[in-house]
Every structure is written in C-alpha cells, then in structure tokens.
Amino acid sequence: MPANLTPEYKNAEAAFRSARDSKERLECLREMLRTISKHKGTDHLQAAIKSRIKELKEELAGPKKGGAQSGPATVIRPEGAAQIVLIGSPNVGKSALHARLTGSNAPSAPYPFTTQFPLPGMLPYQDIYFQIIDLPPLSSHHPIRWFANALRPADAGLLVVDMSDPECVEQTLSLQGLLAEKRVTLTERCMPIGVAEPDAQYESLHDPFAVQLPALMVVNKADQIQNLAGELEVFQEVTGVRYPVLAASACTAKRAE
Image (cartoon, rainbow, N blue to C red; front, side):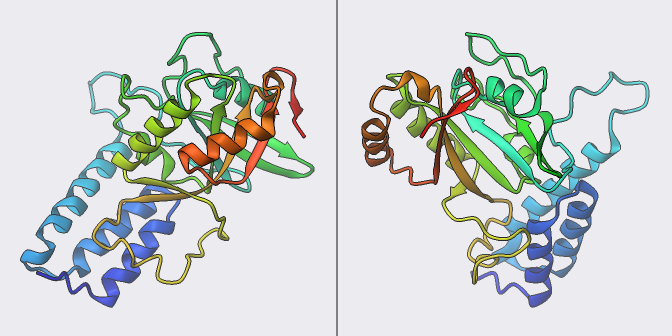
C-alpha cells in the first residue's frame, strides 16, 4: 500500500534531516508522527518514528535518578563553522590525524580500537574554526550501535585510508558494507549546509533516518607509498571510491603532492 505522505509530513521530515540539535530533532519527529497519514501503508514508518522519539527522549533525559552515571557522549553538539567526522577502519591513523589537526590528546596506539567514543577537537584556519570529531573505527569485529546517530549532526566526513596497508582494499570494501548496513551514504558532492539537491528530501521517504554526508578521502601515511598516483588509480578502480582525494601524513604533518 502506498504511503501517500502529506506535504506537512514531507516538510517535517525535511526539517528533521537538516536539524543539528537533539531537541530540535525530537520536535521534528513529533511533528512527523502528528502529520503522517495513519493507515497500514505507514505502520512500519510510524513504528520507526516512535522508536526514534523514545531514543531521543532517553538521550535528553540523561541517567535515571539514583542510577549509574552516564558514559561519554555518543553524539557531539556541533560547534564552529562546521562539524567534520573522521571515518575509517582500524589502525588507519585517524587518531594521529586528529591530534595533528586539532592538538587533541587523542589516544593513538599500534593496536585496533583505541578510540571507543567520539572525541571532539577544533581545527583553526585563519579566523575560522572547524570541529573535527574522531570516531571509533568501523569493523565487523567491533559493532557500534550508535555510529549512525553520531554522524547525524555532521556536515561532512573524512574517509581516512591507509594505502600502505596491503589489506586497504578489503578494509575499505568492508567499511562500505558496514556503512550501508547502518544506512549511511558518503557522497562525492558537497552541497551548502541545509540545502538539498532537487528531490533529495523525498527520494528516501521510506527511510527518513538514512544519513548522507559529502566526503573527502584522506590517504594517510602517504609518505610510505612510493608510487602514490599508480596505487591510488588501482585502489579507486577496485573499490569504486571516487571521492575527492587528499594525500597526507599524520606522522610528518605534511601534505603529499
């Protein structure tokens, strides 16, 4: 049965997609539930909206009185000109890159899963500050239930890849699959904040909780790659990754040409 969603619902969903604050997203969800057409064709979507409302209410309420203290935040409130998240497989150097860019004390080690929760930092550029978020690595061996929610406030993503690792292709293909499972899509084009491409706000009406982020691929440890152009060409051909590319090294703090 077709959903036959109302214009009021579509407007509420568009507002939810562009909302950057948990309270604002909660109000948008409530408006989506209020304006959605009530019939069998929307039963699944109504249930999904109610589930998200419950999650956000619990997040905003914090720990229960007399209960255990809450852990580190899994969603970081945006600050500065834009919020940019670091996404990658284990041991690609995200934390070292975060420390170089922001001066943070992001823990870095030669073993995987050092980063357990989102870590914010600020990158100054002239008189503009960008918020850079170091996220835990994505791996089938270390599932992260809240990963997609952590991406929702972000304006863009940096896909960090270590092409000096012989398994970089397999890692990237696995990461793409994990992102797809979480309904996260990294896009090649960057749109102005709050502006959607034509019909983009309606193309996933069946899944309003999908996340789309413009992405830049950062080839980390580029100083360890002899034929970077050739390796990059093969990598792109095999993985299908066509994001804009920046080659750099977190260890030497240099950008590769």
